[in-house]
Length: 168
Image 1 (cartoon, rainbow, N blue to C red):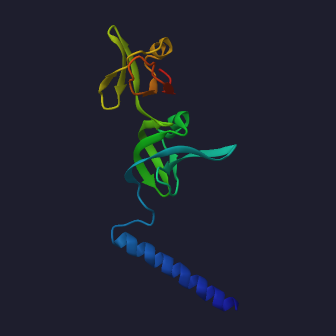
Image 2 (cartoon, rainbow, N blue to C red; image 1 turned 120 degrees about the vertical axis):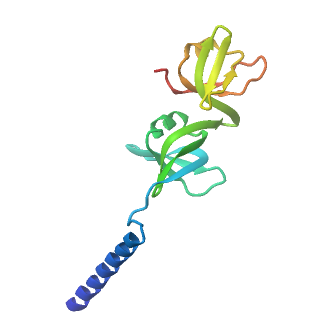
Image 3 (tube, rainbow, N blue to C red; image 1 turned 120 degrees about the horizontal axis):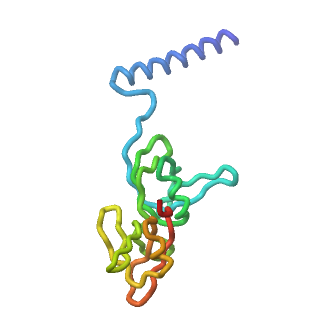
């Protein structure tokens, strides 16, 4: 019996070694390289304290994808929002390089930096486009330099907004 287990283990190891050698001779590696990825979905917090993490849940349903990398910390401020993320995928995780908030609740929103000039309040989006923010509240004006999500303009109505990252 013991001899049979030793033979089985040897065959398994030889098979694994042959597979790695075949991949390397074909120019591949035994581990998958990160791949560029863009995705849209809802940010959700998964797990229970003290071990929680963020995931992206597809809008139409499906498997969640864990979020990590440099952009993941800022995504905590928009838990529940619909976002677009761009980064790299390695295994079952997206390392978020950049993201944009697209929707909060049932409202389409824009994501950018609050800019105050002599002509009014503006939102500088990632593309560089400046969008006027009519009816900006004093609190929003005081947030100049902060990254925020903000509702689309409606005449005579103060915009809804939330801070993604405070001013530096």
